[in-house]
Amino acid sequence: NAGVTQTPKFQVLKTGQSMTLQCAQDMNHNSMYWYRQDPGMGLRLIYYSASEGTTDKGEVPNGYNVSRLNKREFSLRLESAAPSQTSVYFCASSERLAGVEQFFGPGTRLTVL
Amino acid sequence: GESVGLHLPTLSVQEGDNSIINCAYSNSASDYFIWYKQESGKGPQFIIDIRSNMDKRQGQRVTVLLNKTVKHLSLQIAATQPGDSAVYFCAERYAGNQFYFGTGTSLTVIP
Image (cartoon, rainbow over all chains, first blue to last red):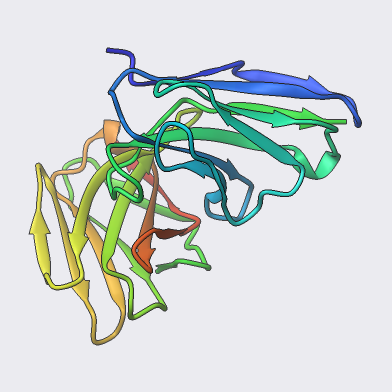
């Protein structure tokens, strides 16, 4: 039981490049989330998926898109990376939407030059 | 202490002592408060939560206290161990599906 897995662990992009962050969970959770963590700030929600087939914007969605590929997988795409998107990205899941016990992946550290 | 919005950077304790990490919150309508532990280079890990209609909740070596009068939350860790060294942050759930996360307190356990 791996929990929540994320790939890649590290990534360096040049401004304007695109990439997709992958996330998968094996806990049969309905809801999944993408957060970013920046120094001196708490986690901020980018997008979430309440259940398979649905996605919604969070607090900071600009510059990102998501896909809930199936119940297990939830990807985050940066179409044209900007230096302001340099951050650590965490995927999380919970049994139901806004469940207080969220399970987090190990994170992706992204640097945009 | 830590606030959802401010943060107390570090706390150092001797191994075996009890640790108390504090959090101030601002939204009196929040219905749940949660503590997470984040070790260096890892994702946050759920520790314990408390519903707003409770004052105290205990887990394994941890106790969370909620004082709604002064909007204050604390996490007490008993007999702190080196493995407890991490960043601890609180979160609150508001409006049923919104979360606000604090910036965290870095706990260092001195052997």
